[in-house]
Image 1 (spheres, one colour):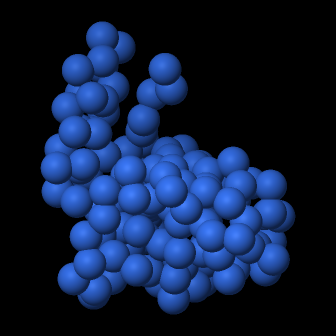
Image 2 (cartoon, rainbow, N blue to C red):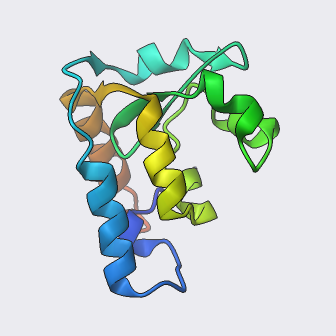
Length: 131
């Protein structure tokens, strides 16, 4: 299985203060009050209806598909999935993070967050937890 990495472990050439601001940007999204499970997200996995989970927040990116600078294919690969690592691995800019906030529709259920933390922290190779 693929090891899940925290935001802190993603290699970056940016200064630490910049990476801290990225986390703050994602965490400062005001809650919509709507809670979803990964099962709900998984049902939205096509170009006509695309959701993904990034940093325990749920985004409906359907209307952004044709505008995505990286192309449709990369979004389709992560449609309906937990996509935090893929999002961070690319090294999205602050502008991209701000743009993402427009597509926010809710939060990942607390039980789903804990399940992911338990799953990744129990790995023999010392996997880490996404918070």
